[in-house]
Image (cartoon, rainbow, N blue to C red; front, side, top):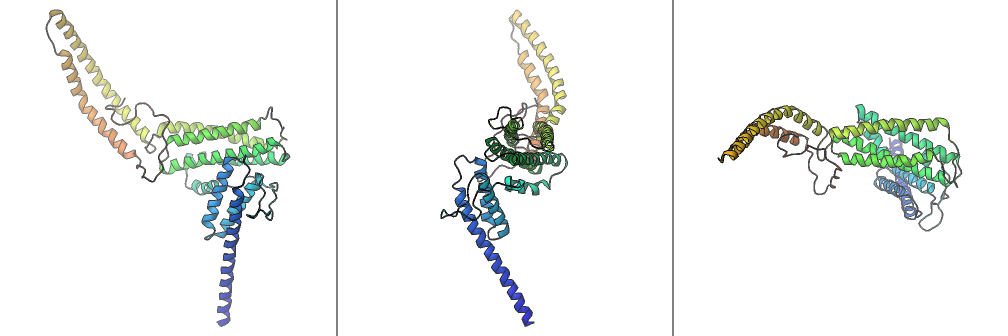
Length: 371
């Protein structure tokens, strides 16, 4: 028993020391990575700085609780900096081991997974139906773009500026497509993402695709690109085509279902209400028009004879009396829909919701009868 206890204690001590060593190692590398990140070249794209910041925060959060995850994040920071021409040096200025900007040899070295991409893997698991298919189409476009970017990079010399630009364009495409995925999933889960955000995501994605298209069809680029395997090009073309269908369908869905400050389904419920009351208001309007025409006839007769008449005012009052019960009933139902779909107001510490760019005509409270 004594020997067994001693062996168990020794094992625990070794595990404790190993964990402590891993934490210390990650903390040291993270400090060095942060030092290098602050000294990136001036022309470094903004999304690279954002990615370095995300990975640094992840490493900081996990360096004590999960040193392995911390080291993985720091390794991605180092790979990203090397890919963008930054040699890794110690805080003292001495080159670090492996600090030379090595040429990436694998797809993941050239385009390391992003923190958002890793979160999306978990988020996608909860989606279903058409949203799952649309999110998968975006993911296939991301994967096809990364494969194409890596093929272009591998087939060309590192001094080719067009090849270097393809890497940056691919980074933009991946970032825009991942952001669009995130908004799509949030809308599906919570209904608390407004249509302006999805429209903005689409705009960013379209801009990135236009830049990508310029390098798929290079034309007058200063430095010609070596060709990539046809299968890779065809995969990207198919993914782009499928994504156009997804974007079209989602834009139509936005117009049908989303409204500023309301959950999906609000606009549809309002249109059903409008369709149900419209013929009833039209019938009253026909009766009101008859009353008005008769009143104008009496008014004309009174003018010719010099008499006074209140026929027009009486017709207006009669019309209002006919409309009043239906207006009250339709307003009550509109208020019920409003309360049912109204999203909770943001707290004082929450960021303000983005303003919608446009508001479909005929919607909103206090309109009396449906337009």
